[in-house]
Length: 95
Image 1: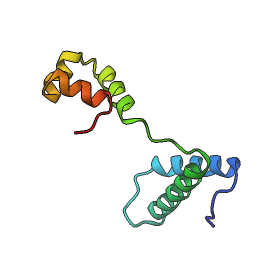
Image 2 (image 1 turned 120 degrees about the horizontal axis):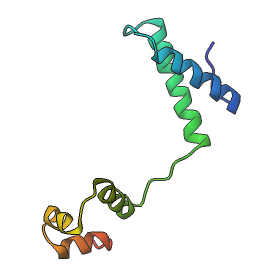
Image 3 (image 1 turned 135 degrees about the horizontal axis):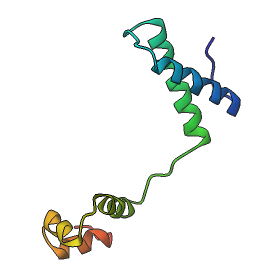
Image 4 (image 1 turned 180 degrees about the horizontal axis):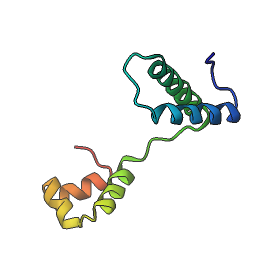
């Protein structure tokens, strides 16, 4: 019987079971697909409570993505319309 996850050990067991189920070719609305859905909900709830992830700072997220894409500042300026607008955004100024 499935129950809420209350320990690291239970979390590990549920993760293993979810992995096993994901390796199968599950039919929609089957017992196994329903089990996977419930396990996923329980895992998400446990992780949200025990391993919270803070939302990123929007400017840091933009700069990180620019770096990932290998984008130059002139390319970003073109994308945003002007160097002035780029500066406003990256300095956190609102319209």
